[in-house]
Length: 352
Ligand SMILES: Cc1ncc(COP(=O)(O)O)c(C=O)c1O
Image (cartoon, rainbow, N blue to C red; front, top):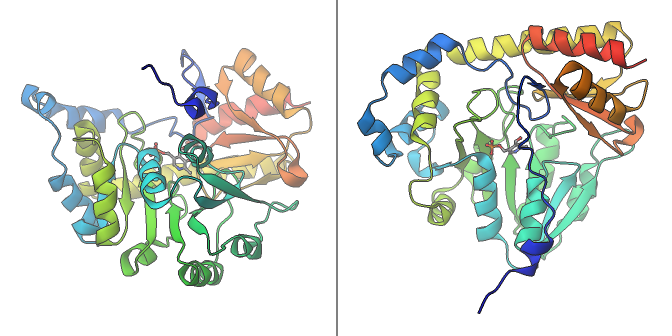
């Protein structure tokens, strides 16, 4: 009997697989410049035919990562991009029709997975002034709630939670037995982390990625941090050999090269400073620069700017609608100053 899950048939997905051609992509929060060419060449020199022929082994890199994070390896599960880890947590820690609470707007895959697996995603919207009222999150943490998804910092709004706010949310989550997933994809751009919760208590997961600061989106690598039993459950969900050998090789080299992380952070910060100063000097309102992205309120129609940026300037950016007092505005990825200059030059020309 042929069968197709009707949920999948009806699921609306947008795949941003258009050819890159000569576009400057500032719409996916990648690092537009990537890692230094010499660094790439050096890692690739060590690649042998056997390395490519063999299934990847994760133990060694998990140890390198646990050293870097100061955790035990039992607290870590490597995944093929953090989007995969998020999927496994939703699949394993919520049930059909299970209640998942999350802020909106947010990373779109939380809602996609919820729809895909028939979960009930309850939205907590931002306020008109673009702040998040944590009492509204807490109010949604009912006895039936199985999972709360938070981001630190949030994508796309860039807002963050104070220690007190986070602890207040956690107190209720513990009382109501709600598993908490904190997506820290943009860690390093914003150094404050809630990882200690995932290491010190049960039912808290942190997901992180190597796609952003580490500039390895093309290789797919992420990880889940959590209590040992919870991590075992996430591991059970994984496909065999899910982690890319090249990704682990690059990530290991970044983590073990003295000064490499600092240099990536510093280059990024120069770009962020340049962009913010240039926007400020030209009277632009902006928000959310805690990650490697920023919201910009434009003077003219944001959607039209997106289209003209693509056609006339070969730059890809995104427009978001209904962003509180910003209305429809731009979201732009932040990279090194040379890319930010190309973007701001184009913006000032088109936005008038
Ligand atoms: C908040 C957030 N979480 C997760 C991801 C997925 O990252 P990965 O490349 O590790 O799957 C993204 C990607 O943009 C993101 O913005």
